[in-house]
Length: 132
Image (cartoon, rainbow, N blue to C red; front, side, top):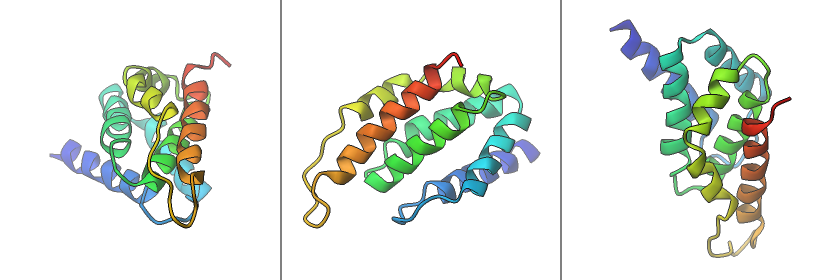
């Protein structure tokens, strides 16, 4: 039962981190996700990667997609999160789809939001597959 609540808390934390509000995600929240991934067992790490890559990247909101990709990049860039990188690599198709993301231009922002998703996807892929 504790594992269920731990999983629910992680999903809630990720949902807050990748909210559709058009404001930057605080670095302390990203660092908290790194801490969760670093301390979690293998199954939980794979659950976090799967949730980010499937549920959050499939969201229609461009803000959610961009924040999710930035969160993946941030966690994957930390040296102590190698298992997370391997888990995300198993879902790399979702990241690769975002590299070619397109949508109708926003009346106010034009094509900038879609360009932001594509750029964030390239950066996330680089962090996930980097050997540094």
